[in-house]
Length: 123
Image (cartoon, rainbow, N blue to C red; front, side, top):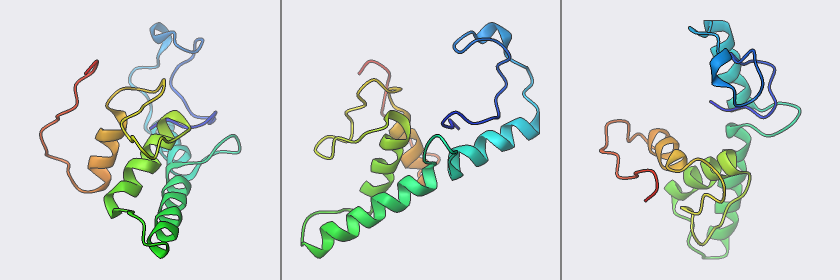
């Protein structure tokens, strides 16, 4: 998982330089990255906070009798986690984020772990 400026990583070089990756990445580093990604860091929210925010926003929409599909909150949280913002009118708008990431994460959060992957890069 990604984390916002967390203290755990397996890249000993500069950002984006994949030639200096620690391989295999030690379990304690992977565990730390997952914990930071879910729980957040001092620099940014984690997936849990973003999911809670999306649920609260969905509840507010339902109170106003507006559409707030339950699965949609997972997509909103994953999109904000990946790109930092959400286009509520088009959850597939990834801005400059990783293509297909949100669909992959949201599908896993909603239990679709074995589903065929319909998202392809550059589509």
